[in-house]
Image (cartoon, rainbow, N blue to C red; front, side, top):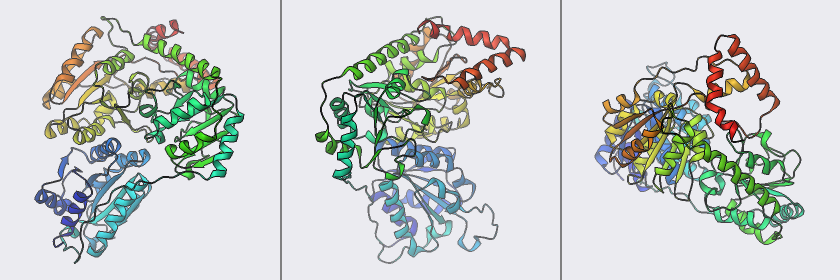
Amino acid sequence: MAGTIAELIVATLRASGVRRVYGLPGDSLNGFTDALRRDGTIAWGHVRHEEAAAFAAAGEAGTTGGLAVCAGSCGPGNLHLINGLFDAQRSRVPVLAIAAHIPQEEIGSGYFQETHPQGLFRECSVYCELVANPEQVPRVLHTAMRHAVERGGVAVVVVPGGLFLAEAPKGATPRPVLKCSSHVRPDEASLARAAEVLNAAERVAILAGAGCADAHDEAVALADALKAPMVHSLRGKEYLEHDNPYDVGLTGLIGYSSGYRAMEHCDALLMLGTDFPYREFYPDSAPVVQVDVRGEHIGRRTAVEVPLVGTVKDTAQALLPLLHHRTDDSFARLMTGHYRRVRARLDALAEGKPGDSPLHPQCIAATVDRLAAPDAAFTADVGTPTVWAARYLRMNGRRRLIGSFNHGTMANALPQAIGIQAAHPDRQVVALAGDGGLAMLLGELLTLRQLNLPVKIVVFSNAALSFVELEMKAAGFVNYGTSLRNPDFAGQARAAGLHAARVERAGDLEEALRTAFAHDGPALVDVATQRQELSLPPKLTYEQLKGFTLFATRTILSGHGDEILELARTNLRQLSLE
């Protein structure tokens, strides 16, 4: 095709199914954004901060499975992308970042806004390359997109601004880049060895994660054959929690005692598509069989006796005929019974009284869950919103739950929701935001109005970085530097053109959420939330107990004994249900 490099890039994106590019304009991007304008088929997702552009692309890619694109101008513009790109990379979703650069002839001279993007983005990408002349562009662009979709990660193409306006190489045509479908399974000897280990055990437990995204039925079939309780990771929740009689919930720092006990008492562990990082929650001596399509990830969390390189779906189908289908389900019944008791206690904590003020966060999350659409897509800020989402949002096979579950950055919920809503305009998208996270990228409220995206935001407003405070308590530190003097988030949302409400009593929550969810545009509900609510892990170590004791002693001695009294009052009901 004739035309410019920018036109070739846009045509290639269009042929590959890309429908929007998130970013902020800048002079080094002018050639590219003008090509988008003239093409007219790819929308410009204009955000207020490039970090939000990368998060939005990650949110879109996480729910569609297809390639999403963001762009940043030279220097500070594309540098702002980096946190969102790290999140996309660690979530293994396909994102292409177009990073504009200073003029080619000025590189290395300390020019205005000069950085070296190919070095900056190397760690958060599966592919990162600078193009220096027009002849490079078709091949580098194609290679970058292929890396992103096949390896599941970020690809960065660095383009000097003037190159966008250069003439495309003669004969260059836009070629679509779409993910290929393949079957990957282990060899017969490895499968036989895995079956031998699992058949010899009496109490098998399964730990399953996001690698089961397309293998729910196969994972449940393995659990049924082995009569194995199934523990899921946080990223595996949306794929495995529903229609699963062997589900015993999460383990880990925000998990349940039922998930922890299932792994503690098993005599063999089968890991399915998970890279669960917390080594202290793995069994001490049980043999482990691990299935992962990325063989380099096997064994990096715990010792593995039988590694199986393959997709969960293909591996499970090959492994099932080799297993002895059991009739003794006593271990599974014991652990699922434990889970039902844990679930009942958690649900009891979500029962608020109309006069409760501030509100318990369990009540907020449970009410959101009850009122949200059956196919709602949720995002959750890192910190306590993720805890309550993990414990109270019920997945049903149609709902989605997206967060910064591997990278662990604040301020992800709102910008990820922007990308999800842009890609799914008719779907309900609910962002569970912390007051600290929302404040970091507060300008993206303006993006919702500008792009007319009907995202619903529920703010857990507890005037603190409360998860950081919990970590301080566990480590024996007096809470310091964590208080937040918040603005009127509802008032600011209304000033930005959103529907908004402030809730300070439990009795007013349901009506406020119903009204917001029914509103045909973006809406925000700011909820006064208990600051001192504890979210305890399923296992408290001696060091954590010692830490809480030191925290209490030091807090009293520093003259803040009222904080200990408030902590006790807030959490007394949790102790009464144990």
